[in-house]
Length: 126
Image 1 (cartoon, rainbow, N blue to C red):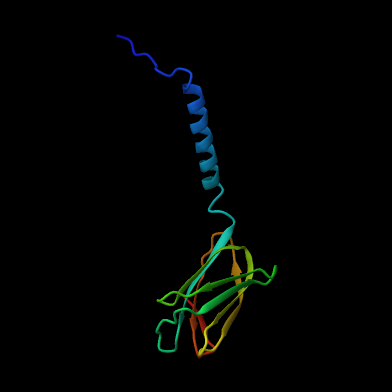
Image 2 (cartoon, helix red, strand yellow):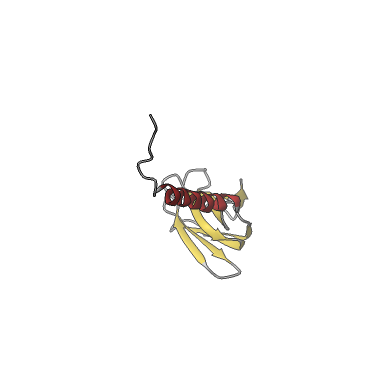
């Protein structure tokens, strides 16, 4: 008994479609994770407690582009999809001292983590 291909005319187009998808998805992986970076961090008070709903502004000093995010209930913030370059990060909330960190350099795929300590001029990197 011989096996017959039920859809002989679809074999080539389907193979071509899957090969094209494989090349496109594979090409993206070969090129790395993209051309952006992410800044992560936390905003804490002097005792180490989280500062929720703090505004964190991330400014590209070369282009002037600004991304603004809010810290969550645990004081964590994430500013994703930032272009490479030099940045200035500012954390603020009413009742707390505004803190600024200058000279943060992002490279492709980097994810620096910054901890802001409120009511103090200090900013430490983890």
